Length: 216
Image (cartoon, rainbow, N blue to C red; front, side, top):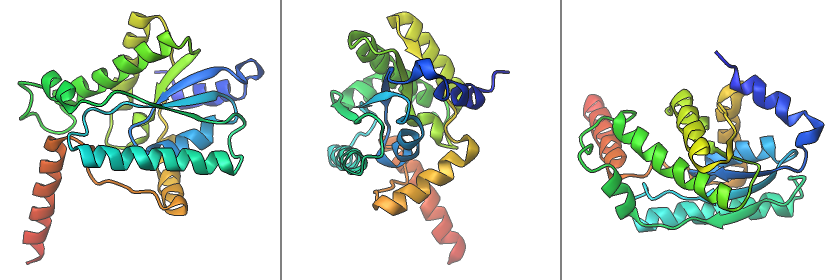
């Protein structure tokens, strides 16, 4: 099995990689916080915010605004070797709902989530190919609730389909997830407690209700 975390460390320390362009799909500011500080000394990063799975427009706008704010703050501090750019993806939650039609009752981390991953990574690959980026990647592998192997397989498949290199990752390794929590506190980032879709919100509410009943 390939150790993608070690593989990425080696790439980041390869002189010929310095200044190459990378389109980074971001799911949210907290996840991107660690990822950006980890890779921005090597790559010229453009963050693509494409998340039609966030089915409430107000929630989407709140998360997008936090992403922009975080990028502006670390750029202003001179943290990245190359200024990080931000790119708004199109937003239409119907695109997600149409894609997962028939899978509404699937549990979290099931087939519905795999469809959602492909939707977002396919668009990321398309934008990366159109913009002639050297690579594309996603922050989704930072979450301990997401299957990095599945994400990397989908990313590689979509990269082949669009003719652009996918950068495999497992950003939660080496304490990446814990570092993202620390950075979220440092920058006062909004940390949501569900992935974004109505289905994950409903499951989160059921869990909260169960926890309350257990303490009563």
